[in-house]
Every structure is written in C-alpha cells, then in structure tokens.
Image (tube, rainbow, N blue to C red):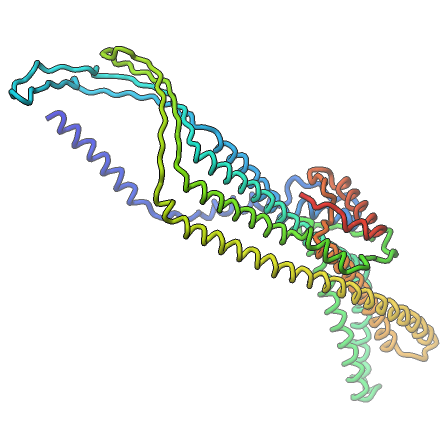
Amino acid sequence: MAIRAHFIRAAMTVAAAVLAGCALVPKPLTESEISMVSQDRWALVTASQEPVRGTIGLYEAMARALKYNLDHKVEMYQTTLRNTELNLARYDLLPDIVANSGYAGRDNFNASSSQNLVTGVQNFGASTSREKEIKTADIQFSWHILDFGLSFVRARQAADKVLIAAELRRKVANRIIEDVRTAFWRALSAQHLISKLNRLEGRTRIALANTRRLAAEKYTSPITSLSYERELIEIKRTIQELERDLSTAKQQLAALMNLQPDEKFTLVAPRSTHRALKIPRQVDDMIWAALQNRPELRELDYKLRINMHDAHAALLELLPGLQVYAGANFDSNDFLLHNDWVSWGAKASWNLIKVINYPARRAIVDARDGLLHQRALATSMAIMTQVHVSRVRFLHYRKELTTAREYLNVQNRLVRQIRAEAEVERIGEQTVIREEMNTLVAEVRRDIAYANLQNAYANVFASMGLDGYWSELDFETSVDELAGSLRDLWRQRAKNVTASLNQPRSY
C-alpha cells in the first residue's frame, strides 16, 4: 500500500508538471519593458564615442565612419563570432574525457535464488551480491579516430568562414568610405551655400511683395507684373529645391559617422583639394588587380574550398570508425572483491548506409562545385564590367567638373557686370536676383560635380578591390590616429597610383 501511495503521488506530480507546461501562452513585452529597452538602445547607439572637437575634415569623417558606423560594427562582430566558432571547433579535435558519479538505493535487498533446470529443485536460499545503497564513480577517456578526422575537416571549414566574414567586412568598409566621400563634399557644399540661398530667398520674397504692390497700385501692366511675379516664384522654387537637396547631406554624413541627427558640427575642406585626382592608365592592370582583390571573388574561393572539404568529409564517413577507450572506476558495493579497477578496450563500427548514399552526397558536392565555379565566372565578368564602368564614370565626372568650373567662372564675371549695371539703375532688381540665383546654382552644380568625382574616385579603387584603409589598421586607436593613417594612404595613392595596385588586402 505504501508503494502504491508513493506511485500515485509521483504520477500526480508528473501530471501537474505536464499540465503546467501545456498552459504556457505567448507573453508579449509590456509597454514599460519596451520603453526601457528603447531608452537603453537610444543611449547605447552613440555610447563610448569620442566627442566631436572642432571642425571635421574628410579623413576624420572617414575615420569616425570606420570606427563607429554600426553596419561596419555588425560585420566586425560577425568576424569575431566566426573566430570564436573556430576556437570552439579546435576543441572537437581533442579526445573525450567524461567523469560520472552516481548513487542508487532501494528499500530491500536485490536478492535472488537459483533453480536446477534438470531436477527442478532450488539449489540454495535467496542471496544477494549488492548492498541496498551504493555509490559509483568513473572517469572515461575515449577517442574516436573517424570523428577526429571529421572534426579536423570541420575546423578547416570554420577557418574559411572566418576569412569569408573578413571579406564581407572589407566590402562594407569600402562601401562606407565611398558614401562618406560623397556625403562629405555635398555636406560641405551645403554648409557654404545654405546661408547664401536663405539670403537670396529673402530678397526674392521682398521683390515679390514689391511686384504685387506695384501691380495693385496700377504702376505696371497686369501682364508685365504677372510675368515678373512668375519668374520670381520660379526662382523661389529653384532655391527651395536646392535647399532640399543640400540640407539632407549633413544628416546623411552624420548617420555614416554614427552621430546624433541633431548634433552640430562644422566641416572643413582638406588642403589638397586643388590636386588633380589620378587613376591607373592601363585598364588591364585595373582588371588584373580586381580579379586578385575583390572580396566577392575571395568569398567564392573560400566557399569552393569549404565545398571541397565537404567532399573529403563524405569520403571519411565511408571508412569504419575505430574508438579506443580507457577508464578508472569505483563502486562502493562491499560485496565486490575489488571496489576500484581500470578498464580499457576498443570498438569498431561501420555505418553501411553511408556507403549506400555516398554517390548521392558526392553528386551534391559536384553540383555545388559547378554552381560556385559558374558563379565565380559570372562574378568575374561583372567585376570586369564594373572596372570599365568605374573608369568611364570617373573620366565623365572629371569632364563634368571642368565644364561646371568653366560655367561658374563665366557666371561670376557676368554677375559682376550685372551688379555694376544695377548700381547705375540700368538693370532692375529682378535681373540681379535671377543672375545671383544662377550663380548659386552654378556653385551648387560645381560642388555636386566635385562630390560625384570624389565618389567615382573612391569607386575606382573599390572596383579593383583595393581597400580605403591600411591592412594593418587598428580600429581601436583614436580617431586622430586613424584619420592620420587614412590621410597618408590616400595621399600616397594620389602620388603613385601604380604602386597602389600592389596594396595588400586588409583583414
């Protein structure tokens, strides 16, 4: 009866636990939890960053983007994760060492008797060779030879995944540098021209009000007044469109540098802006550098190597597995002659199903190998095209910049003549405003052409797979040190373009 009662209580406990598990329902986050998490994330987005001191130059902007941009940090953490997985994979090469301990008890002896099968007579009374309560312990060493070989192959694959993560980080870093160069020059243009645009818009509003007043007082004909008013409104609309395009550039640059959108900072142009940007002359050299350095191709090469390791793993699994083991054991049972002993042995096993499905597994490996090879060829062609396009794009933007500078030069001379004529009242305010607006538009187009040229310049080197930072660069250094390293790299690249083709890849 006591045993039955114990069994019933145990069954009720298990049933209660099962019912409690079945009663679980989804529990959404509360508003307070969401608010707390959002507040923490808001604070952590720009935490542990060097504050902005003084003006920000091009290379400091690039340094801040490489050091603090969250997309780049994601790739850096991805690389760290792959390295950690590689370290874990190395432990799979070691043999297994397992320690066990246990306790067992019962309310009566584990006793038994024997019976003579010929006579059917019981040989002797009940006996036992086991105590009611015993304690056991052992430590076992085992090593599976086949598992060691497979673990070695998987560790090599984990090492290749580390290199893939590094290539993806290179790709993101180069894209960030391209975006920073474009956003920096557009934001610098906005910083120079927004105040001028605001002043010109104010003058336009005054001229527009005067025009409407003169029309209301019948000093001008309605057609002349409306034509004048239409032209002033068109000028006002053009100014507002320019402000819209330029005003967002600084926020885009702040986002790339991981600064708060409302943080105030001032940009300063590098001293070497007058230098002509140069790219390699021979397109074949550019293509050769791209085929050797582009992260997309290196990623595919590592995937091909991983697939080759899969083929090796499939072959290893065809072999019989051999396991050797040894261990030290202890048992507290006093009926035993020896309470502690050492055991050893070996086991062999062979999974015949692996032999049967090997052709199918090998076919998958071969098909994946063919796919990766074909993808590598397609990527190579795309990269070759990108090199050509980046080169043509750079040369085109260089021509556009030359034309924009010539146009601005002519417009500046023209507006000086217009102002001189306006001083002697030979030309009205409307003409002065229109030409000053045209001058600002010419400045904006000149600056945008220069920003596009800077972006195309960075894109030329990115299309060749040449990193915008030194291979040994330490992203944990200060912003000033990082900016100095970037400045040295880009200045040397500008001086000797051919030597930059031999720049080692960064990891």
